[in-house]
Image (cartoon, rainbow, N blue to C red):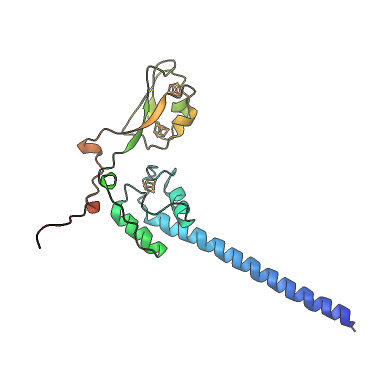
Length: 188
Ligand code: SF4
Ligand code: SF4
Ligand code: SF4
């Protein structure tokens, strides 16, 4: 037969374990919800992995949006449709993207200042898409069509002679985001 103290201890232990279990299950559910949201956001992104959103790929951007670190209007290739889709998933109004930057958004690419480059080849070894070419001890250059603007090469260059520049606007690299153009005014 249990004494009153032992009985109280068993009841206390039972309640504590129940509360702990409840807490762990709530935490697990919250973390699953977060990763589930990031997964759904990622599926709505174009998958270009171009890093123009400022993150190293769609997955990283989706995770940052899900965690509220960044707004859902940073994916340039996705344009207005993607912004709306992400906002719907998040259950918010789409952020209003205004100004010329959202319409005429030249792609960024890495640019090597060849007069400073020593040809050490470090940048080329780290470029994930083999966009940097050049012989050892010769100035290197970037294949602009291949560069996905991840910025990795900048961190590798001991001469600090690489910078990200906006690609010169041409018809072939123009980001035609026609849906972001809003026509206002006119005669009713
Ligand atoms: S801008 Fe970011 S989210 Fe959009 S396609 Fe490129 S990497 Fe993916
Ligand atoms: S930013 Fe540099 S490392 Fe990244 S893709 Fe372009 S050239 Fe390669
Ligand atoms: S890391 Fe810098 S110095 Fe070395 S090859 Fe690349 S651009 Fe030239």
